[in-house]
Image (cartoon, rainbow, N blue to C red; front, side, top):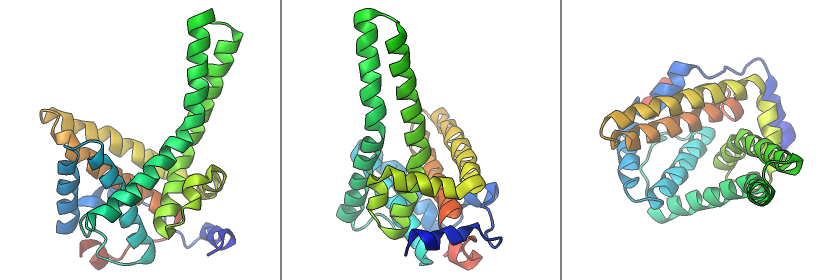
Length: 227
């Protein structure tokens, strides 16, 4: 599939994701609730659990894009799920590295010379790079998950174009994502342990919201989501 074909998603047939739809997706059937519980439990083994959850989300996005229910099928085979998550983890590091490098230079400059023009410029550049990386990452992650196309993980320029093409849908998905992540902190009230599970729910909401913004013009059929 070509990038040109993807640009057809600007048609009026695209139905933007709703908040209710996104928030319900990870827990509206028994399989989703089971995977959320398993995902929260494996987080007791960091960073392995975090990487496994990342790979699992990519698998769910792939099944959504392919129209292949049930979307939640557990974490097996564990090694393949971990491998996909590890590839995505290294991509996240690559996206954030420019900001980190420039930020480290700003910190070193501040430590030696205090706050001067060069320090401020370096800090500003680091901040801009960080914001661009965070804004772009969901575009790359989503298309990689949907197509299993690694180029979107390691080509920020392609990922940024996809994010731009998402337009208002992409921005709405960001609003849903930030809201879900914020709500997940309610889990800290459960002696902190609850957050492991609410965070898994939140990141599945994130994955679904961006899938609907970039690769899934309409929500899956009710029977497919509940299977």
